[in-house]
Image (cartoon, rainbow, N blue to C red; front, side, top):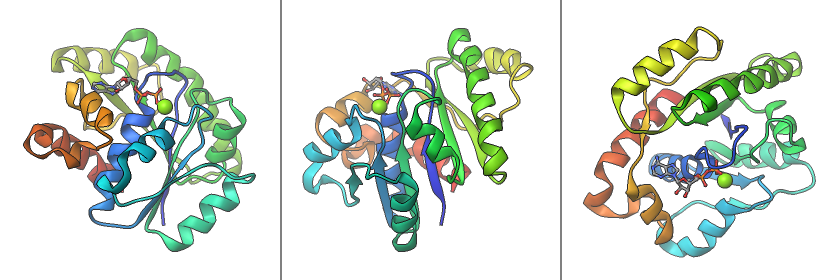
Length: 206
Ligand SMILES: Nc1ncnc2c1ncn2[C@@H]1O[C@H](COP(=O)(O)OP(=O)(O)O)[C@@H](O)[C@H]1O
Ligand SMILES: [Mg+2]
């Protein structure tokens, strides 16, 4: 069953936002366990506030992320790991060696997109021990479609990683739902647009 790593090289790219909302969407269909491998512990904090609002666990990392993930993988359809904001962190390096797919949220700004060159390198290195590793860039906090298509096309020439067809737009509801200890799936109509794009991304990934 797939082990999904949410990785990146920048704080604030949206790893935790994607982690908890993807997990919430996946949990509607399948069993999922989340590991918060970022020492900042934001997914764990969110889970503590969420209480009964959501129906999947978020675990703190144990000594061996690989053993931990493989153990959850045996009991769940999906395991998702929220990683620290550096692909060179020991946690990210370890996770990329056994994950099935790496999802990399990036903001649609040239600086952020160019910074993914380092991620491309990290993915290539990980593939030496984990040749089946898939990787997918996800544009997060998109504000206009024109900007996206222009930027992505320019940057695609420099980066060898595929970009998800689904882009996640900048929406206040991602922040507000987290404040309430919820995902965008748990806030009724206010979350409808966000739910649609998260579900669309899940379709692409799982
Ligand atoms: N698509 C989005 N729309 C609006 N706000 C977002 C979106 N994605 C992330 N954010 C906000 O941006 C900030 C950083 O996101 P976060 O998921 O914590 O990033 P990371 O885990 O990569 O550090 C948070 O305040 C989060 O609520
Ligand atoms: Mg985070």
